[in-house]
Length: 310
Image (cartoon, rainbow, N blue to C red; front, side, top):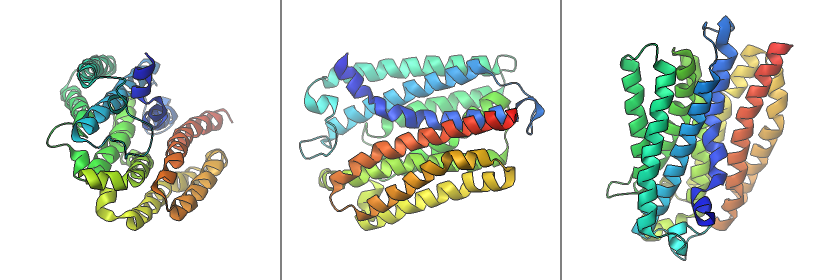
């Protein structure tokens, strides 16, 4: 099991949970007429959403391992942890079988989630979410697998922003409330920017090897200097769309106090990124952004609970 646990890349899971936690926390804050809606938060839906996200993230990691090995991006020149196929711990055939199995499990979990959420009203929205789920599975695989792998043409950032920002936050909110409010787009943008920032760090770390093997990520297209500017812009948008306006207009100063240490860590992080000259020095910053994004969502949950009790 040890090689498979390494291939699952468990350190990426907190980031994938972040958008679900944030969207669910917003729904929790609006339940029972306390916000805009009159619904009851469903912990079963919350649990199944996390499970489906877990399976989808593992599927994405395995597909990434398989696709990059096939295209030669995982080689001796690559910086970062050794991949499963690259190291010889798992064969390409076994990885492909695991990808098929994870795709099936993700689909089953997603269907269970949609049934629990829509069982009293199986309408066209149910069909829309089902198709969105299928698209998410396809996107997880096509990032590096196949001739049209979008991760090799600079579209990875866009797809990460869509699925790990907009879809994750807005979708998890809608599955609870069955309603859409434009205001939820703002935290979705924030979490999308955090997720893209992690990918951007990964691509800045691998820029030399990616350029050599023809993996034309956005960083390869922009160049290291512009990629650093882009990285700073992601954090500016992240804080400008949700936490700052939310704190000002909602008066939830508990949230402001709770995320202050995170904001300080992000400020120091941006300074370090600006100073980096050797691509391998980006690697420690990956975990930092992923974990702080997770903490950001957790702190929002805590602030909502505390504010309702005070």
